[in-house]
Image (cartoon, helix red, strand yellow):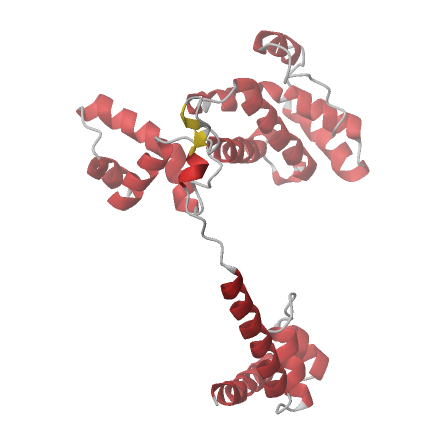
Length: 278
């Protein structure tokens, strides 16, 4: 799908729309046939046609996010990536039109781009926070027009979230990133970076931390010696590895049930706690 060659990052929006509007919309039958060719035969020409015929819908969705201070063409480009992925995954036998399926992918890519671009610091880590990020301004404006009030408690009630969450998100959205290299007093070379405390541990603290780490490794190694081979294997594969195995993986390996592996693991951990606490 990388064959799509529309230089929307440099050309004007008007020029881009002239190109997009040259592509004809597809009937349901045409779309189904093209999607089937792509799904069954990997026909990239069919995929290209599907993408081009739906580019104008990406523009429509991108326009909904113009209030976040980002270039419309950048939003469109992110939406186009979502559209390409939707075409790749689209199954015409599900009985829905491509754009009905693709709109979720288009919105997801545009929203993720906005979240990445808004701040160097993540302002939405949970699904609720991400939803609030995109609903806050819309809800505030709607309440202001309807009731003349846009207080935090009114917004929280409307969105069914905690008032503290609304207040925190409002504060985050009202602040943008500031460079630590910007001079506080012009010409003096004194920047925000100079005001930050050095929180790095000193050499003595680093040495103590390293000694404690080595001591813990030694104690762990000694403690493992008291375990039976099967117990040690389970602890190593469940806890002391970067890629832990599941209970089912170990159950298959030892030819026992998942519950038996869990019991052995708990028993081994109990032994280790006793030794480590001495």
